[in-house]
Image: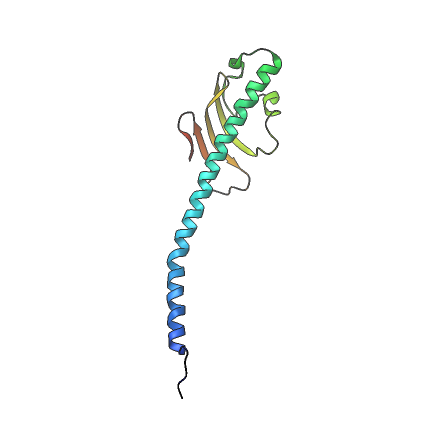
Length: 134
């Protein structure tokens, strides 16, 4: 009688090979996902900075002053005025410990993070170089 099929040894060999491939690929995929999340968080910080700049410009035009220098600040806690904070979009959950604003432009934002990013996801922003992990 001629039976066709795989033996138990052949099936086990295939399972072992698949397990080895999974062990090799899993850390690589995890690192790719982690670095993509970090890059997305950095871009979110840059978007947050642009939201602040937009709010400052909008407030200056509403007040009719056109003088963005009145928002110059370099103080712990950001020291953004309540009128500027109120103009930020509701969905912007990023906070920074310190902002440096010159003529309506955020030149630096330090120790920026958001709820849900977890530990090790703190960023600094510098005008010209963007957001980088701390």
